[in-house]
Amino acid sequence: MKLSVFSVLYKDKALSEALDIFKKKSIRYVEVGAGGFIGKNHCDPSELVKDKDKREKFSDLFNSKDMKISCLSCHGNPVHPQKQLAEMYHKDIKDAIDLASLLGVPRIVTFSGCPGDSDNAKYPNWPVSPFPEDFQELYKWQWDKKLIPYWTKMGRYSEDKGVKIAMEMHGGYSVHSPYTAIKMRKETGQKSIGANLDPSHMWWQGIDPAEAARYLNKEKCLYFFHAKDAMIDKNFVSYYGLTDMQSFGTAYGRGWQFRTIGFGHDLKEWANIFSMLRATGYDEFVSIEHEDSYMSVEEGLDKAIANLSQVIIKQPASSPMAFAIDERFV
Image 1: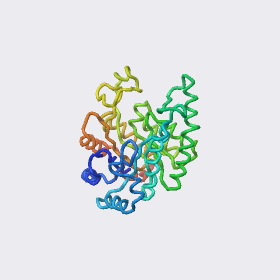
Image 2 (image 1 turned 180 degrees about the vertical axis):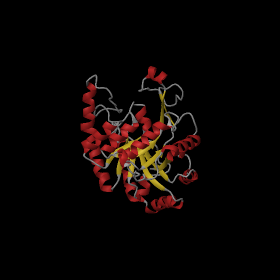
Image 3 (image 1 turned 120 degrees about the vertical axis):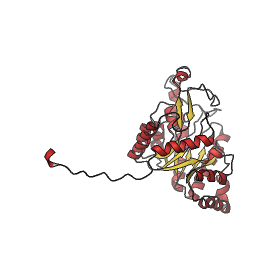
Image 4 (image 1 turned 90 degrees about the vertical axis):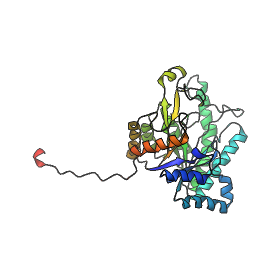
């Protein structure tokens, strides 16, 4: 497995400066923010797709620092009920796929999005309960009429471009669990579509990330991995529930919080995740995010690197040792 860092940790710095920071920390792979909610501070795909000279300069920057792009990230809601917003996010995702193809980057990370409750809706509607039964009808309508048609088309497009789509399983979006990620892959029939596994999003939904990895790898659809922790505060969960609607700005008092590696779950749990990844066939990138309200980006990144270095499995496995059998005990 190879350690990567999400460039938007330093989105207020020039890309060259951010790369220098990562390189000093012995990071050689970078997940580059490329549109959607996370902006285009470090990479504007529409511009780079059109301009070969700018695209070559972009590539040369990484080459000059002996670094590589692990993926392009473009998080948005391309099935947003407001057509203007949906089109904007769709274009960002399409541009990211086009740029990844031109750069030889094999994957992008994005969201599945979440539709509204009708063609006339204004906001997304995320049904998470089978009762009242209206939610079941809404759930089926969203998948049959919005999600499957859109992602079948985009899956074919990305396949033609030689780029995989790693959908980040995230609460608030239609793909938010191993089941929904696998459902998307099967019902669209597109093998270019897979999942991005972020353990923090699993823990706050009550999902074991190691088991999530096992389910996804069984279907051969785990395409990327985000390294971020989550702290569950049982006292506040008992009051607000896991669907805590308080703003992330409420740093102290939420039912759960995003944390840096090791500050939500101990390293044994992280070791279990990486062991499962290795056992079930994922030996790709592990990309560090930072959304910890308790500490600075610099400190969070340093602690994430230090803690991950103890548990991430980087080298290929050794061949099993052959033990001589003492025939006296046979």
